[in-house]
Image (cartoon, rainbow, N blue to C red; front, side, top):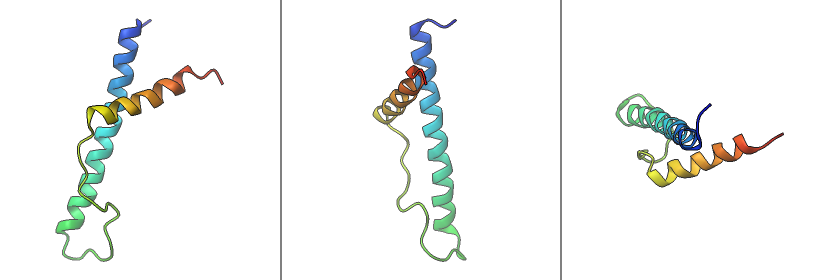
Amino acid sequence: MANPYELRYSIYNDARSSLVEKFYNDYEIWNNWQFDKQATGECPIAERPLMPTHEEVLVEAEKIYEFVQKKS
């Protein structure tokens, strides 16, 4: 059983991993769209994605924590 600090660290890492994975996926789509000469229409990713900030990771971690705390 993890202690509270280990649990918080695990939730933080899960949130960070999720956001970083989304960043890399979005960046790949955006980058490929920018350099593909045959791409037509608008890119599904409007602006160049940015690496998630610490504050964004904390918000995502809070969402995960709230989900874990629910009993239903």
